[in-house]
Image (cartoon, rainbow, N blue to C red):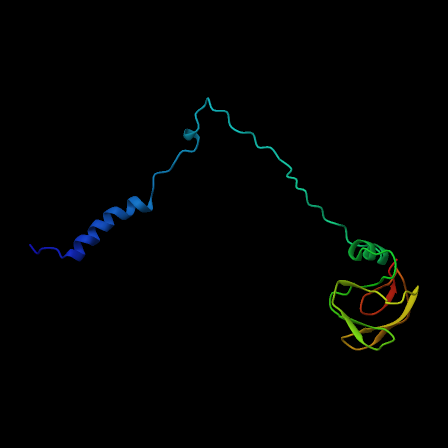
Length: 150
């Protein structure tokens, strides 16, 4: 009879061990808890913390007060579009970009109750508003039109 090589002997030994590893005995969960031990009842607990989430500003004045902490000299703008940047231009001609679904405000060095602004849709460069912007009111725009943010 031929003697088995070391490889053959290891293979046979591993085959004898593998079924034990691959198929462990099932554990009966109910037997792990004795009948005299009361089971915990599942209850819904409400977790709390000391953080608060401020509500989104509904008006330009809300934005100025909540986000800028001012009650005067604040000209807020909101872009409600989810696809288009808008550009804001004042008398100096500089374009100020406002990304999609964002808010921004401007403050004057010399206070006035209203300023003149032109708003452009950056995708097609169409002017969507040209007119006055009131202090603490501002404008809300959607890429096609603007209206007072009241």
